[in-house]
Length: 439
Image (cartoon, rainbow, N blue to C red):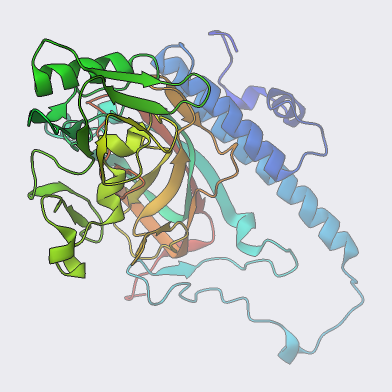
């Protein structure tokens, strides 16, 4: 669509609008919704001016609403033709249309039913809903200079009323989290040379390393931090045929401990939600402590040794060790998108499964990470993962807060990189009014 596109909806016929969405005359509402999403997301990612994007998205929303109305009107005509007009009912059999009744009496935002909901259609309330896309960018979050993009809030310029569902329609997310992180201490491994008593908790710089760049960095760090600069007795390599890592000492046997870290026994890192706290207790003899103090699997997963493919706590008595699993340059396959809408009427539908509990509060979606490091990942629901939150009664949206959580339920650090996402909000219209107890 060119910059000279006519945004006046009144200048278009129904057939013109159908052509804009590239639909046939027998389109279904699901087809219309899909096309509207595709156009909106392509507009967001285009290099057009901000005003052009805003005007075009507004045009798409109006056009979608008009075509929904046209489709619903056509459906109602068909239904009326199929009704047997000669059928008569006793007055006592006439169903109650509930006009004037409170739709959601136990909600904090009670509303009245204003018009009769058609009982001769299969979608009932769906004939009185509209859907709009809201594009959020963390550049425009609340309190920008004192917040981070991976945990922030948005105060809307106006209230979105009578919301019945929200959907994460799309998200453009930078894959910039560090697999090797000093913050999470996934950059450390303990090496002890048995004959010389030389030892160190070897640390490498935070970042992301592939199978080519990782071995020389670790090899240099081990030789410098355990032995000194000369002689270099340790070598690190990754086999081309199975991607498994080898650490070898040319002269002496050595011990390698996956869990021993600088911070032991302090808290390794704190997780959000349900007060998950994983405490590192690796400087103890597991035979001398009770079960409550033993290592949690989560502590083992978040180590440099696990990333390298080693699956035991400690290796000792040999000059060379080969990892049991292939080298994995990513500790993160997916993340949770948490959205707090400051309402209590939502139905939880996405659950992270942990050994002793679920993580579900405010989780709107799970987002697969499918791109290489430092390449943006775009999710537009094409993976068929359910990303919709439905409400037990209509709610009002004025403010939202979001968090990006790792698969362990911890905050993900995006290094101050901003990102954007699209919320598709479905609202009721024309059939409800705010509840006024005085009337």
